[in-house]
Length: 351
Image (cartoon, rainbow, N blue to C red):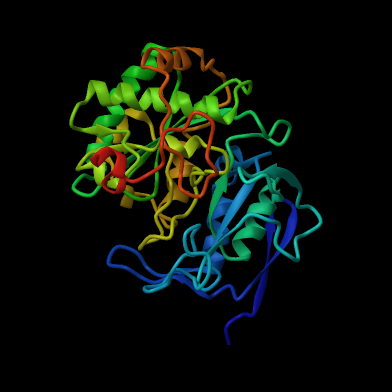
């Protein structure tokens, strides 16, 4: 008879895992099925890495309590109800006494207390509660209004793929070197790439977003026809989109080591720059990552060694014309933002 619950050690805390044999990911041609207990054990196996990504940060939980099966739907900002999975920003009920929180403010002016991981047991508990992906804010709880991380999201558009993102990443690495920045790449868990840069926590979310815009525009200039910063999908074409809005307040990216709700249970994998051309996102899964972690360790281990100044990118933003870009549609109208209307529906443009 299947076990109804098991108790495991999570960094010194006793963690009870209910329905441990529940299938969270079905088998694929490359991988076997993944159970709830395997998800929890995966996060414990990469504990130092996932904690480096989450420690002391407000974290939104992406919960798939029924598992990730064909036909299941994730509730989003645009469609908040009717989904099988959902984003949890506020602390769930039944939280253990060792879980700590931090209060953050959304662009709407509302606030919430989000979980703030300080030990691996919190990650294990969240996984036991059906969390697949962890979405940390780019701030620490000591100062939730000044990001300490610049996030560069290289998002291949339809007609492009991971190999295109890798080529763009090579140019991004050259630009980072010129700026004197150290960048830390990782797979998104899907077709894209993320590059993180630690920054001094003395600029606002708006400043960091402008820095990302400047970086994206420079990539666009260096790789014409291959890179775009156009916000509207109808304007992006078959190019790699630099999603600068991932640096706006309350926009988050799946953390390093987070599982993604993709077939085969792929994970967001930290990479060495030189291995980018030789890997595929499907190489890194719940099944394969623990062995890789045991062999190579956390490739983001040195990410906190240096924090960089944003001034070079903010100066570049000014030289580029100091022109802002649209925010996501759920944001209130932001200062300095251009008209937020899809070009094909812009009557003034047609006039």
